[in-house]
Image (cartoon, rainbow, N blue to C red; front, side, top):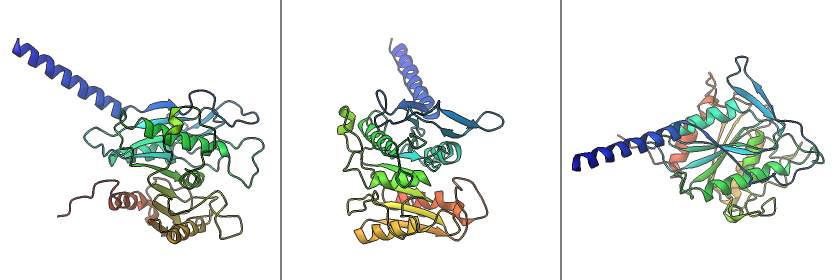
Amino acid sequence: MKLQALGLGLILTLGSSLVMALEAQTPRTLDVWPGPAPGETGSIGEEQAKKKADGTTITNLTNVTKPTITLYRPDASKNSGAAILVCPGGGYRNLAWDHEGEQVARWLNQIGITAALLKYRVPRREGTPEDQPPPQALMDAQRALSLLRSNAADWGIDAKRIGILGFSAGGHLGAWTSTNFDHRGYEPIDAVDRVDCRPDFAALIYSGGVIKKGASELTPEIRVTSQTPPMFLVHASNDNVSPENSVQLYLALKRAGVPAEMHLYATGGHGFGMRSSEHPSSTWPQRCEDWLRSQGILKAEKTR
């Protein structure tokens, strides 16, 4: 009987380990909202996905009306407890789903971070002035952060180590979300919305729309204060989206006493994402990992 019980226990343990491993390898997609998303105006057509020629990889998404988060969980042996909401760019017109989304999520898993890839609403809705960001994107990001934090225990996440990572327009969304956690962009609808939506840290890569056009000051919605979370900023000097977006944000953070690190590379252009290249800008993931360790978000690596 003892041998049978031992065998059963071993089978159950192995089965549980297999389930956890499969969960870590298989992304899980969840709706951001329990019903129709708030703040909708005008008419948006059916969601469209542009794929590579072989049809295996989605490169761009648009006409998003049903926001989701796709959870990519690291292997249990690597899980650091940290989590990051990933916001692809695309000028608030579409979402660069592969190279600023899925590839980023896989990298985060490699360093022990749970990635939540956010499919936020694009393009901008009717009635949104071109000189203002679309409020629906902010609603989706705020709700997604509260959703992550409210499910932290079940998803193996530390509720005090949840950040946001954005590219281009997604970088603007990351800055917007990080500086407006005290002003939720919609009326709370359930218990999830009573959970804090402040990111604990932010990494913003070649952000656009952070400064006013033709000026060197932040746009009104980027409200940097001493309560703004620590930030990691990346830009290339030859980016057609002015590096002043990152420079002016960095200076505002410095004046507010918020820890910030900026990497301004000579070359790299715009939209380099996770691509390897001869430009030093392609090393930003390593620098970001270093920063996460220096901030205590990830454990510091042992020195020899």
